Image (tube, rainbow, N blue to C red; front, side):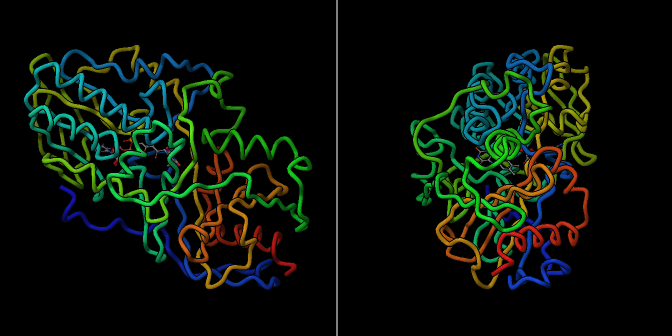
Length: 404
Ligand SMILES: Cc1cc2nc3c(=O)[nH]c(=O)nc-3n(C[C@H](O)[C@H](O)[C@H](O)COP(=O)(O)OP(=O)(O)OC[C@H]3O[C@@H](n4cnc5c(N)ncnc54)[C@H](O)[C@@H]3O)c2cc1C
């Protein structure tokens, strides 16, 4: 199923075009750059869901409920226990598929080849159900997206298995023979805008809110429900990344199902007898459909449902928030930053902008830094041109390391 898909196009790879602050500094120009724009991506429209003001955990249950016997839903936003995560999406796809198999459906159209859709396909195929996976992009994985345009594998979507103990992804990584490596959150170095090294206790509360809470939810505190940080459960154990790329998991998520890439679904008609999906002008019919598109896509109304979805589900879609986390990945020809630090924090003049940097060098063996922006700061940065984003990233590095 996985063979034959074209490699994902790199997003905005470009040579360094920055000037100003960086020119005055001794830090080198990057030799490669990748900038994500998950809000502008029409097949994500954000990074992951959060409990916004007015939303309840019950909204996730309503989002995941089937409509009748033929229209099913799954994905990270529909998982009440583990929302916003890869394992939440995986388990949601698994659960919906098991439920669907009980209905006696013999053919299922799965909308979306992210981890929820791929896991559902495996389960359904195991029950002898004939599946067709309709995927809008020309690649599988959705918000798991490993890009190798800069040389080493760089995850532009999910990076971590959040908690290895009891997490189904740990077993999957093992089956795939994928190396996982712990990221030590205590191994950090903090700087202010004058390049002064700070202790954690010297950082303002707003900085801690950004890196400890807002990056996790992809939303500013002001936009989060009071219940958001209490929501869901976690696994114990370490936080680990894949030095060889998250996409290694797909090797063990294969199934005999038919995969149709570059097939965005624009409409789904459903009744008790089955479903008919409109796909790039054509039609696909099946006994049932499993919709795994991101919450952002449902919010935008990119898929027209006939009849309209029940009011309870529409209210859940409207109330739940779609967050934003973006990455600016910079490759250099040499390391000029703290070798031992896994995280580099920047307490700058503007809340949240380029506040956290992941040093990928110890993991991928190449001089690569990844800056994280979330929530409103990420939305503002995403609206900027590539050269302006790069200039700001380099100015921040100049502030931290420019004094040599
Ligand atoms: C920047 C970023 C960092 C993250 N970091 C982590 C992390 O470290 N750890 C973690 O656990 N989670 C992380 N996440 C969240 C995690 O990636 C997601 O929760 C998970 O991958 C979602 O899987 P899914 O199958 O629900 O959705 P997706 O992966 O989004 O799959 C849905 C699929 O539907 C397709 N689609 C959309 N519209 C249509 C249409 N109209 N027709 C057909 N197909 C369509 C999409 O192209 C996509 O392939 C991160 C996400 C982002 C963006």
